[in-house]
Image (cartoon, rainbow, N blue to C red; front, side, top):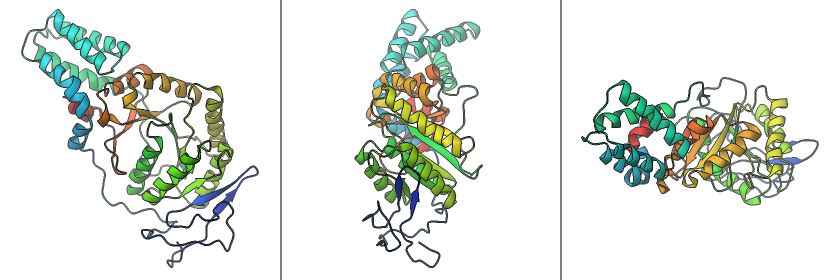
Length: 365
């Protein structure tokens, strides 16, 4: 809308290769692939935001121990409640170590990470003369937090704009919750006063474009998209131009996620990254891998493939509420050195929180 409340015309950004259209909440998408000065637009029932002003913050999203405990309920009741029972008042025995290792593996902490964790705990029991299992439980919680806080890890993007335009590249396999996570990130940063623009960089699936537009409408955020099978690099290029033109300060880009082991998909991701680097200084400023916790150790193999192709600065952990495999969080950080930046706590658009290692570990016990 313009400042006087009139709905603005549909806008179109062009590149030498492809035309893309701007999908805005509340606007008709009829003829969106070929907008003109006379293109019909209409005002949606909930469209009350000017396109050039940041969405006002409604309420601060504060990490909730209650919501996180609910999210981790299956991992806690299936595995870590048994760890809690194991590490009670009794003395530490060889059986204690064996049972603890078995429980960690059942939680999908992974063999390598479990071995590292147990070695650290054994060192502490010797150095601190720990004899009772309840003292070992305290040490275990401290070491779990330590695993989740790798030294020198990149921090999440600040809620305040630190550049004219910051770019967040979202990657991950189909079905991991990538598009939903993009919507949640958009809402989170918009609520903090950022002006967000979305780019539908997965042009290989029409459903991916449609889904992002639907989420964009729900979040009240514009989406730059192209036709199915158009060049993702061209879509991203036009999204950059649109972001500068509209004075957006955060561009979040969706990407293709099928066949993560295939060379051509990784090449497409590299192409997008090259377009960003040529057109925005330092971009992408964050590359977030969306990980479905239900995939357990399979998620580690996926993460390795993406990290090799484009570099990953952080992870978004999803679907923890439906799996007892929440221990994969420790493997992701320990084995790959990728910090977890955000955690999904439900299906609603506001159900996303900044990851906090202490709160996460407390929620497991």
